[in-house]
Image (cartoon, rainbow, N blue to C red):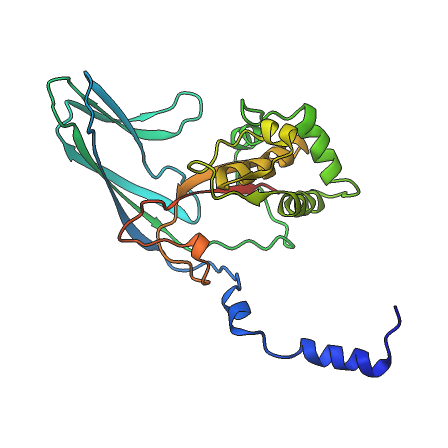
Length: 262
């Protein structure tokens, strides 16, 4: 296609015009900011009691340069309460046990944590900050994230021609954006069964599905990655309704994101 010089200059001038309001709102420019402290309160009441009741609730657990758990407190009519950890993953949870004599098991868990903005410059190399055990876990297959078969095949296809880790990660990201989509009818956050999704060819799902595809393809390419589950605490600083929440009521604020280690 041939462009006349005048046409080309007109096009260049058009590109220099201010972006429309909706485009300006959809910027994403995270910066490392000041720490903010939050208090999360979760109340659970068991409505249909059948015998003794055991309850597990998540607590803020990941400690990083941008998130730090502070403390947990609880109240209610449980006979046994304590913090426990999953023996395999190390993930901490609050555990409560109620005898069958309690007609309406109720507990309120209050967790305090502080967070701040997070930013990463992919073009700037630095020293690894994660320990070897974390990186080994972020490379391992799981029941829902197998790294062989169709997952490995798809990873090779998605990263064809990419040489560096950064190029492979960008190619996998682009592949997920081009081939997967959010399916509002998916229950909850999705199951994250990437083998079933790839075999069926139906790559529709929610955050646990879409992030799992990205993580699985990264791991199958030899690049450590992991899913991170949590809550959206406040409105997005950049106008993204999908990334924000109403701090007064966090029902439906659960979300899953993906992290990759370069």
